[in-house]
Length: 365
Image 1 (cartoon, rainbow, N blue to C red):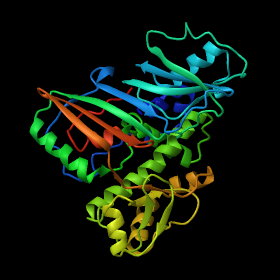
Image 2: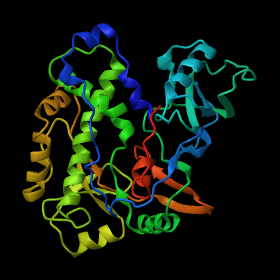
Image 3: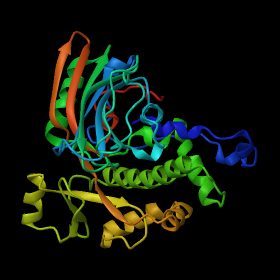
Image 4: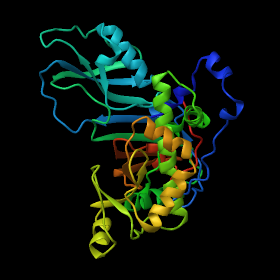
């Protein structure tokens, strides 16, 4: 999910009109850890095969309909580049190509795409594959594939030359039972946080006509506010413990509710039936109360221009779990390397799991 970094591209004419203060390097090192900062370091994504991700749609394809679904294995290409290739190959508009989410360029990604076409049209797919695009399977379906229409992503990640394998395994054991903070990964914010520079420019009144860059800016600013709330809860030791005024989200859904903390709430949290949430800012009031409302309001208020920008662009108030528990987390020791495998719900970041394991230099592509 590193394609957010692509938003750093802009015309030189646009850049020359922009004040220098909107071009700064953002630091994210202040975001707290649940299990403490890792002692060990490791090499991460030195080659695409070190980071393998496979989509799990979570629903059955009908085998008929006006949408051709392709399961493609892509290497060293971002999702947008594959969409452009498919549009050209099938002689379709770019908007006729559907996908569920962005995948890392510096990876081997097995990802679903859909192409709208006549139900009677028979397409020769024998020449579709290239050096970086491999067609794994194809079928028909009645609906176009839309953003977020995934159950989960499966990751197989090789961490190389780990300086303390024993410490890293101990951390993986903690993560398996306790989870990690559900931070948005650094990819969301672009190279050195440049998507947030775009957010500053937009919120200061600049008319950004590039829809992709505009989307990156909105997404990054919203995600940054969320991460800041998670960080503050960790610092105040109210990350794993609920407090009155909290809003709880049903695990595996977008439904949430508010209720005073009692034995039932504690039990449901322990059973992972519900999770503590933080805001994805937009139009509407915060659902929290008391101490939690004060915390969230104060942090969001530090980015008042972003708040107005998000509301003006039609985003609505939502909630997101502050805790992320990888499913089916396993690991294999290979000398000083570790092959780590797990599943994450759509919208969650593998790098947010790995940052609690080892210290690594974030790769951008």
